[in-house]
Length: 295
Figure 1 (cartoon, rainbow, N blue to C red):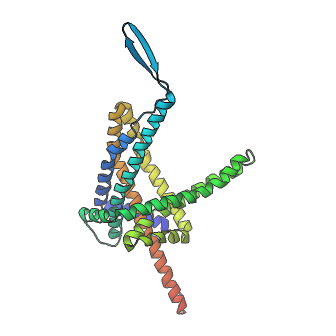
Figure 2: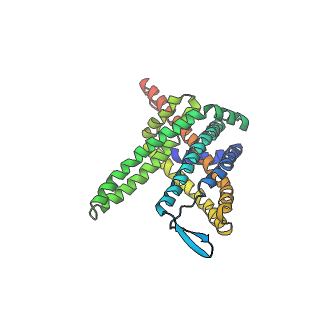
Figure 3: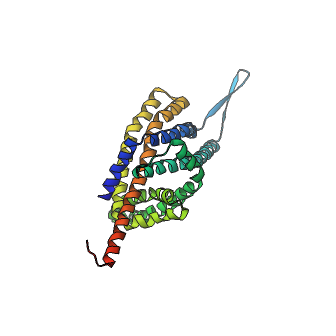
């Protein structure tokens, strides 16, 4: 029940506190042109001939496809690295503000957009590092599901069962990892201590089934938001081609991207509060048990 309560609480916060959406919309609109520029590069798949005129004779010069493709790929990845770094840094500022606003809303308090952004600017280095560390932790957890899949693929067709089990395990671990990844920033925001972020590991493993259930619910919501925004890209690329279409598509997708950011960060805050409430109730029960009082 804890997973469902946190999930529904997240939607309640989103509907009741519109300023949090304003924050994520600013973020999405800020990153939209940079994202469009990053994805606008085209990698040549065939050898391109260049026509060179000399008098009435036309010569065709053919470049090396390996060199052209390699240069295009290098350029794309350079832009991608820059985009990812900028996006992570800027998103860390807004993530702190949205999570802080979500936690305050749950407690019946409120803060202005300027206050939330100001705190985000001061605290974003810690948020950036926390997300980076938990990204590696998540990859390590997910790699466990690849072990039976790898063994199964090497022993096909007998290993087909292992491949299936590996896929199921990967899905479960993915849900757990998603639930886990949403906890450290709210923990840090509330306690104001970088080390407190690592309490998220104990909170999630101590409530593993709840974390997995919450992760599945978040997955469904993310897929739902993506399903709505997907046709926007398709239709834009259909009617507005080239680089212009990519930029227009990026800005049209910004409201959906903002909703996705807000939902993930607010749901993390709600889930953290739910698990913390469970821990507090469990602690009270243990203290009463020591006193010989059984509820």
